[in-house]
Image (tube, rainbow, N blue to C red):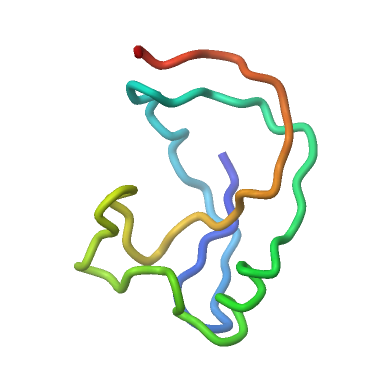
Length: 83
């Protein structure tokens, strides 16, 4: 799938990435609409602010740069993870 990936300040790339694995407690959503959040804009222009550097994964998401930005979207739930 295609994703906008944040690598560093002013370094955003559209890349082919594997579809995320459906983990327990998560859902798979077919995205219908997507927007740009002010947080993502600040991350791009001034960051990294919230994105953990390579080698230091986030304690909850376990992700580190490069990361797929975006949380302003809507869609249809396609699949439920366990729990």
